[in-house]
Length: 255
Image (cartoon, rainbow, N blue to C red; front, side, top):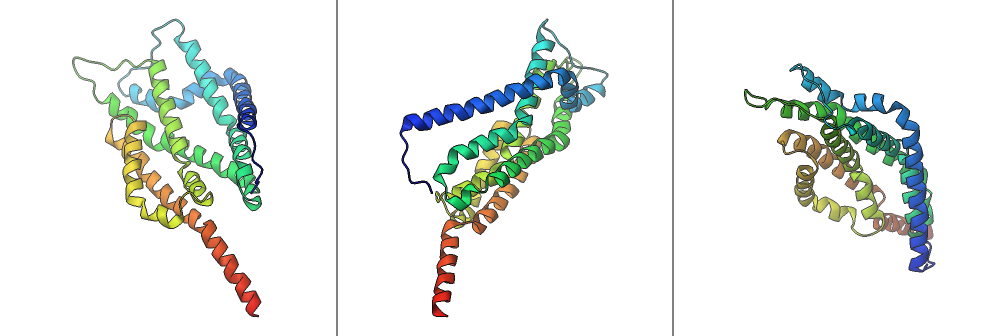
């Protein structure tokens, strides 16, 4: 661990520099993605379009600027996703000085697994949850009201769900960091599983639309991921590793 104490101004300066790298990379990715914004938009909103298509309806734009600005938002989302490795690398580089030397070497695995977990959550939400959510909301048509969804509102909901599932699937890494930094042990994390389940369902209710299906689809994988994170935390638990090293040293001495 780096024991040098840096002034708060230097920490803030470093944070600003790393944020600039993240924002710059995201805008570069967004600029490159804008030429494909229509295709990206069509892909993201395919579940909603298919749900509307069952009733011979389609998305609408009710403001002159709606299509243009929605495509800009789509490009920004694509830029954010494309540059996730840069974001995770800058995050790791910022917190690395507070870790031990052997833990700092995990930068590449951290960047890789962070990106994979986010992508897995987004793909899971897109393929498994989005169709159910839009089918659910489209089922409320009746003789008085007909669904007439705008592209702006549907894109907003899609983005919210997309990011919610991506960020939520980072839970194992969050649990892992709680352990290796010594904030809580793997044993404490496992004992707190009932509370974690409650928090997961509360977070699921906050991040997803007010339908039980999408909440359950988010909560159940998160519970599994939490337990997986606890398992990884147990493998890398600092106290357990130190005890193991001490035991090995004693055994060598006795020989």
